[in-house]
Image (cartoon, rainbow, N blue to C red; front, side, top):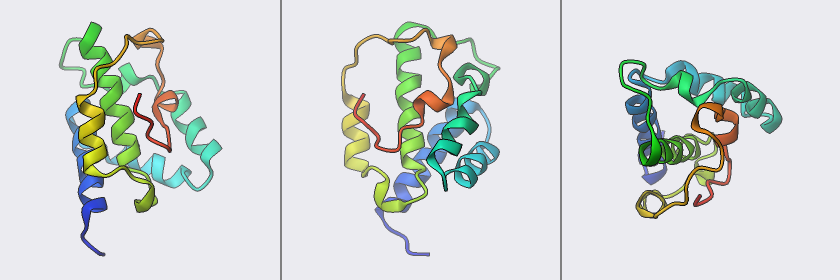
Length: 125
């Protein structure tokens, strides 16, 4: 295994999900990795799982701006976990995305599924 920036960004994705979930996201990452061989399959795997259901249940549900930031972090974490290292964002891109001001959520937080956040092209939304 070659250690490089793409490994660092992958580790960031794992850590970000671990903080959001309150536990190691191993099972979630495994299901994403195993189904990423076909993009429609990865979307269907995550489509039925609501974001609210993978959040750390020991904490109160996020609201307002915190909910918006949770969505951004999870979407970014998924991009960092892309199975193809060259398709992952750089840490510079991660920093830029995290520092941007965002509009309010289009969807109600409780109706957002992981499939809606699983964006292979890590847009700056």
